[in-house]
Amino acid sequence: MRWTVLRQRFKVDIDPLRVAAFIFEPVQGERGFYMAPTEFVRGLRALCDQYGILLIADEIQTGFARTGELFAMQHYDVEADLMTIAKSLAGGMPLSGVVGRADLMDAAQPGGLGGTYAGNPLAIAAACAVLDVIAEEDLPARAINLGTQLKERLASIQARLPQLAEVRGPGSMVAAGSVDQKTGAPDPVFNGASARCFEVLTVTHLMRPTAAQCRSGPGREGLLPPDATGGQDVSRAARSARQLTGKVSFDFALMHHAANRVQQQLRSQDRS
Ligand SMILES: Cc1ncc(COP(=O)(O)O)c(C=O)c1O
Image (tube, rainbow, N blue to C red; front, side):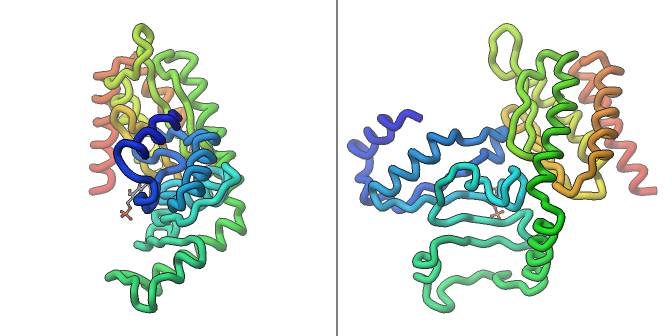
């Protein structure tokens, strides 16, 4: 991180005393699962402390075991002042929240925070159940295990498909990107095609009963299997991905085509 650039901005663009907060994602959710480096997060914390700026960690994608810790901020040994949470929080029920330092949370007067669905009892009951399951089934450990399996499988495909140059991400947030062999830059065609292929095979087809997500498109590639996914699902997914990529000789257009066909078949199976 070029701290000098930020400090320059504080001189030229905005007085740091007028900055209320920095909000950041410990792992970029929509931009390829890049994890913020430790020195960046600690540096940001120090900067916030220096100027009385609040540090807000957006844990909406990273929260609740996915990175191998309950929250991604636990990887850094520094604390945010506030955290935003949602998604896995209530296992699919609509619930989001802000948690943080008591003095900040208590600053709102009773009734000063509200929302149409705030405090929905059913969603809160679901969130309590999610927290129980995370503890009982040690989902942080499971996320690490699942991520390791996915990365190993992707690495074995990588051996035959050198464009698949980057397999990354903490815990079960796994992304597979590409690098153009000549330019060293990401290959958008490959990224789009491979993400689509994995989306259909790894996620839509084989992990369908559980609500997995897949990011696709250049720079957005990534798999978010539910942490409850079993090892068998990963093996089956990887086998199918290997078969498909083998069958079409890594032709990207064909990979798209084949992936679409699988999806159509699945849709017609679902209808019948
Ligand atoms: C990292 C991150 N932050 C914030 C949001 C927005 O959350 P919500 O839809 O609950 O407003 C999302 C939604 O996908 C997200 O992924």
